[in-house]
Amino acid sequence: CYTTPNKELRLICRRYFWHYEGKNQVITRDGYRLVRVWWESNSFQSQVLDEFTTDIQNGAGLYWVGTLLNNQDKHSWIGATLINSDVWATNLTIYDISHDRLEKKFVTRKDEIIKILSFNRSINSDSIPEWCIIGPAANNTHRVHIYSGDVQNSLKEFTNYVTCPYLSSASIGDRNGEHINDLVVSRETSFTKTCFAILKNDTSLLSVSELISQQTNLLITLVSPMPVSKDKTLQLKVSVPQTGNYTLSFYDILGMKLPSKSAERFQLSGEQILFVNIGDYAVSSGVYTLRLEGGQGLVAQCSVVIE
Image (cartoon, rainbow, N blue to C red):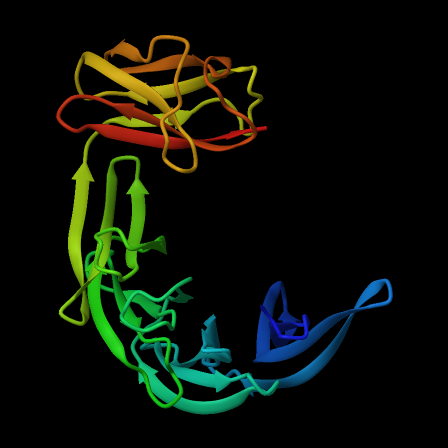
């Protein structure tokens, strides 16, 4: 979805045809549709500007991944077409949609693609936001390929690297004073394993500057259902590897620690239930992080939704 200079919306929608065989839904044709949306009188109006579908044979057809790029006010859409369901190869197709048409520019073949994502700002030396392809790697990890947002004629890959099973990514601005926006990618695979990579500009190429994998048996889980009222008591189930003092803290969405009216340190042993009075913290409606910390860098956390 994007907005045109005259305040209209453009939507890229999936369009497919299907039927039932017994209790199973079988898709026979799959495709995309470019839709114009605008406000007129007292309601939204819509118009189909362009569309296409492709036959699906033996499981091969459109593979529902893709992203929208804004290349210096020239919008492009990246879609992927499954070539063969046995090898999971894909045709990566670039469409120019800046003229209100799904104009195919070029196609390139890639290995299996799980997801295609665009970044919210540039992370290399130009002003065009980059994008990435997420694909599988060995031992339940993912390989991330990062490309230039300039896809007018060809694909330009900056780098690729392997990280924990991929969850999300975000541009975090210039964190090291080099006038280049940095990128963080992360995945929390469980309560006992967290990893992230911070990417920076290094001699004109992006590279992984840090990859952290931390394994502990320090656990924290919510017992109380979410969302919870800010005047209620929160129940937490914790499990610690050894008896000792542990600190329990609230953090807001910006990562700022909230002051508490009560003691934050607990003497914990094994597995037990903790009761936390939310009214002891200066909280309002929203999402917070509850973090349990112990000695030797032991950390576990969970999200709390307060209504």
